[in-house]
Picture (cartoon, rainbow, N blue to C red):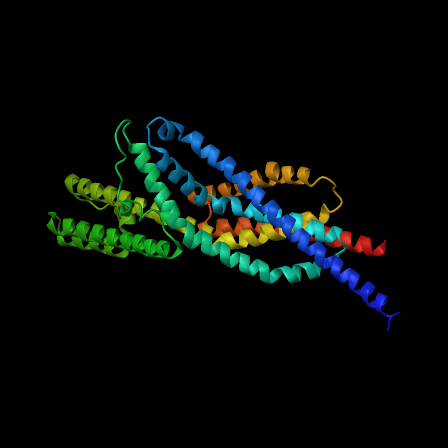
Length: 364
C-alpha cells in the first residue's frame, strides 16, 4: 500500500497540471478581455469627445450631464467593442492551454460549442434588447446638448420624438416599425391611385379615354401609372396631365421616404440578427489564432497586431457591406450573410492550418 501511493499521486499530476493550466489561462484571458475592452472603449470615447468638443466643453453643460453623456456613450459602444474583445479572450486562453500540452483541436472546438452558444444568446440580448434604449437616451441627451444655447439651461426634449428612430428601438419594436412603414407605403399608393382616378372622373374626357386611364391606374402601382400612360400616349388636356404628374411626384417623394426608412430598419434588424454569429466567428478566429501563435514569446506584439489590423479591417468590412445595403446594391440580409460568409471562410482557413500543425506535431 505504501509503495503504490506515489504511483497514484504521479498519475494525478498531469490532470492537476492541466486543471491549473486551464484555470490560469481563464484568469489571464478574462484579464486580457477587460484590458482590451477598456482600451478600445477609451479610444472610441475619446473620438466621440473630440467630435463634439465644442458642444460638450464650450456650452457649460455641467459636470452631471458630462458624466451622464460619457456613461451613455460608453454603454452604447459595447456592441462595437465586444467582438474584438471576445477574439482577444479566445486568443489568450487557447494559446496558453495549447502551450500547456492540449493539442486536440477538434476536441477544443466541441467543448467550446456550449459556451459559445450561451455567449451568442447573451450578445443578442445585449445588442437587440438592452443597448437600444440606452442609445435612445444617448441620442436624446446629445440632441439637447447640441441644441443648448450657451448660458442657458438644457431644455429636455421628449424622448418620444426619437422612439420611431431605428437606432433607439429594440428588435421587436423594429419589427413593428417595419410593418408600419410597409402599411404606409401601401396606403400612400392606394390614396394616390384613388386621387388620380377622381381626377379622371372630373376631367372632361370622353368615356372611352376615362375607361382606358382607369384601367391603367387599377392595374399598376401609382408610381408606374403615369409612365404607362405616357407610353400609351393617351390624349388628354395639358391641365389634366400636369395635375397627374404633380400628384405622382408628391406621392413618389412620400413613398421614397418610407422606403428609405424601411431600408434603415431592415439594415438594423439584419445587424442585430447577425451580431451573435459575428461573436461566435470572432471566438473561433481567436481560438485558431491563439493555437497558431502558441510559440510566440511576446503576446503584447500579437495584441498590438490585432488592434492595428483585425480591428480596423473587421469594421471596415462591416461598414462596406452596410454601405452596399444602403445603396441597394444588395439586400440588407444578403449583405449581412456575405459579410459573415467571408469571416467564415477566413475561420475555415485558420482551422485547416491548425489541423496541419497538429498532424505535423504528431508525426514529429
